[in-house]
Length: 316
Image (cartoon, rainbow, N blue to C red; front, side, top):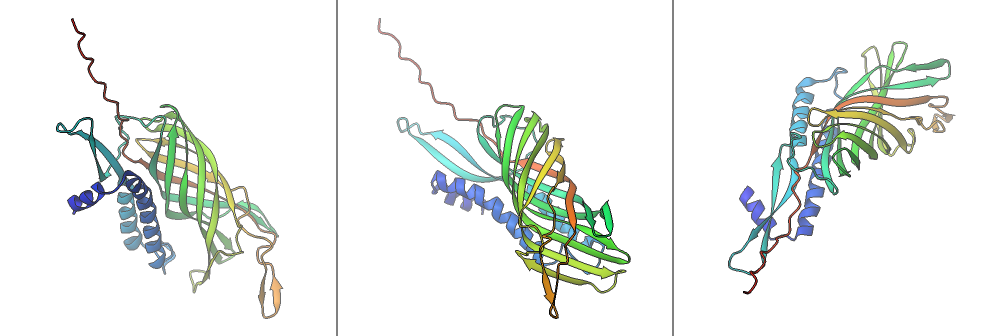
């Protein structure tokens, strides 16, 4: 099967294979998220995480994050032709351990970013309740795709695109309310340290745009009331954030992220039985979370060196 795929790719122009190398990881990320959503892996009937469902999924996604979809260009000179080269394009799945023989300095390269374990909370206040931290919320699988540019082996920048599942838990007497949003966002960050060995710190910010809001409430583990809205007006339309973190051990990342804006749209109103209310008026909730993740760079290749012909001997 792999030979057939490579044979087909050999007939494709370079531009098409470059586009394929970008589209495939994004498509893979969407398929994983869609599978999680349709099978309710993020929210099960039990309040506690159902490990029989979540653990195999996490393992599967983790293995996928190690697979880097990369294009390799090999130049083979044909001894029967003059100055002509044949270019072969192939798709390779590789595991990157951080030991790159050639660091991609001075050019863009891509990487997969996976936040495997996320502990989130919110600093919130509302009428009658002073500012406090909410109950910790555990979630998994924030997936992203990064574009990196390293000026040298010690300083670089990165941006990208990612999908997140973020939210917080509020306790009210014997009741529990869970609120979360799915977002798509773009980060912009700076890296400083030993980039070749992936021992560095990073700092930056970004902007998330929520596209799905979900709220679930229950009393003492009783019957749950929940609803989900696409492009809801209940939450803020945009969610800017700041982050700081470090990479170590060949690509393992530890990151703290903070959202200075309010999670809610406080002007949102709803009407039930002819009565209009503002359910989030007076709320001010700022999300924050700590993640443990993996940043897997795609296989990098050295730049092609121009062939230097041997000088012809001088005539005597």
